[in-house]
Length: 345
Image (cartoon, rainbow, N blue to C red; front, top):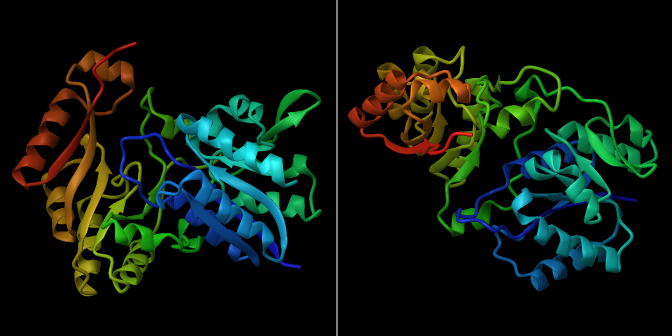
C-alpha cells in the first residue's frame, strides 16, 4: 500500500503578495526520496476558498494509499484559519494532524489547544521523515526529534535534533505550485543558505535556528545553487527571490560574489534577483559583483541610526556602517527595502 502525506498551506491574513512555500517544497522533495507520496494544497497561493480547499482534501482522502499524517505549515497570525481546517478534518477523518513552521514552533500550546496532535519544531526534513517512520510503526513517538505533543496532560518535547549541515545533500525543492507563481508573474523563491550568524535580540530567525543543534548559518555550493537556477531558467523563470535570511555571511565575500556572477555568465543565465543582506557586509565590490549577477533589489535591516539602540538590539552594524551601505546601494542603483524599528523596549 502506498504511504501518503498531505501538506496544507492555509489562507493567510497578510498584506504580502502570495508566494511559494519553499519550506513545504523541501519537505515534499525530501519525503519523496523515501517513496512517500506527497500532495501539496496551497490555499494562499491558489486563492482557494475553504470550500475549494475542502474539496481538494476530500479528493486526496478518496485516493488509494495509507495517509500517514496531514501537515499544516503556518504562521501564528493565521491560527484561526488553522482551527477551521482542523475542525473540518476532525469532523470527517481519523488522521494525525501535524503543524510546523515559525508559529507552531514558538506557540506550541496554542496550536495543541486547537486540536493539532503534534508540533514539528524548527527545520522539518528529518523530523517529518521520522514522523513517517513512527506512523509506519518503525520507531516510537518519543524517538522522533524536535516534536511536541500532549503526554499525561502536559506538553512533552522530545530531544533536539541536528540541523542539516550539508545543504548540497538536499534534493531540490518540489515545484508543485510553480505554475501558480508564474501565472501571477511572481518571483520564484530559491534558497542558497539557511540561518544567520547575527545576534539580533528581536529576531525570530536566530531563535528558530537555536531550536536545533548545529551551525547556525549553512550554505550551498555555488555549483549546486546555480544548477537549480539553471534548471528553473530553462523552464522559463527569469525572476528569482533568494529567501536566505542573510545572503552574505563569512566566508562569502567579494571573491565569492564574483564567482557566483561568473558562473551565471558562463551558463548564459540572464535573470533578476531580489535578496536580503546585512549592512555590515555591504561593500562596493560585493554590490558591484551582485549587480552583475542580476541583483536589482535588497532588503537590508538598518533598524536604527542610534549607536546605543543598535547595541541593545544586538546588531553588528554601527550607524556609520548603515549609512555606508545605503550610500553604496544608491551609487549602484539598487532598490532598497529598508527595515527600521521605530520603538525600543
